[in-house]
Image (tube, rainbow, N blue to C red; front, side, top):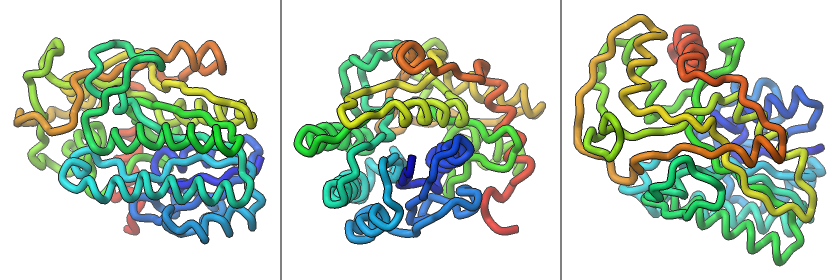
Length: 328
C-alpha cells in the first residue's frame, strides 16, 4: 500500500513509518520538521511542508499515488496548549481540515488518525474502554476530540474508511538504540528523568502529590514505541473504505510519576533528585487503557510488558545519543 504519514518524522510517526517500510509498504513522510527529524525517517521519502498547506498536500498525494493516510501531525504540548490555545487549534484542527480537503480533492479514501487517551480526561473510569465518556481537560485534548468528529463527518459525507487510535503514553526507543524520543524542549517524564541522570540535576519537578491515587501522583499507562507501531500496522492493514473503528493502545497497567522515577533509578543505577510542586493545568489524575478490543479484533500483542524493560531501551538511546538527533 502507498501510505502518506503526516508528522512522519516525529517520534511516533517515524517509528510507524520504519515498520511499514520493513513490512513492504511504500511510505512517504510529510513533516514541517518543527518537532520531527530527518534522521528519524531512515532514508524514506520526506516532503517538508506544513499540514495547513492544502495545495502541497494535494500535490504530494497525487504525485505519489497515495492510497491511505496516517495522520500524526499535531501540536502536542499539553501545558503550552493551556497558555497558547490558538496555536493548537490552528495547527491541529485547521491542519486536519486542510488534510481532509486534500484527500477529498484527490480521492484518497482511507485514514488512520493518531488520537489520544487525553480525550477521556477527567473520566474516573479505570481502565478505559473505547466507550468510556470523553471529558477532555486541556485545549490539546479538546482539539484531538474535535478532530475525531471531523474525520467521522468527512467519512460519512465522502465515503471514507477510518480508524481512530487513542493511545496512551508512548515510551522507549528502538531495540538497536538508533531511534528514540527527542524533543526540544523535553516535556515527557521518562526522558526528563534519564536526562537528569546523564547530564546532572536540572531541578526535576513532580507536578502535584495530592491526586486521588495511591502515592498522590498522576498515573499513566506506558506502551513501548515499537508495540505502538505494531498496532498502527495492524490497524492500517485492516482499513477498508467502509471501516469505522476506534481502538485504545495501552498495556492495561498504570504507573505513577513516582513509580517511573523509581524504575529509572533501578535501570540507571543512579539516585534521582526531584521536588514536588503545584499541579500542572490540564493533567488528569489517572489514564490507563483497556486494550482488549485491540487484542481480540486485530490480534495485537505487546512485546514489552514491564516498565523497566521499556525504560532500558530509552536508557540505551539516551546514553548512545545524548544529543538526540542534533548534529554532534
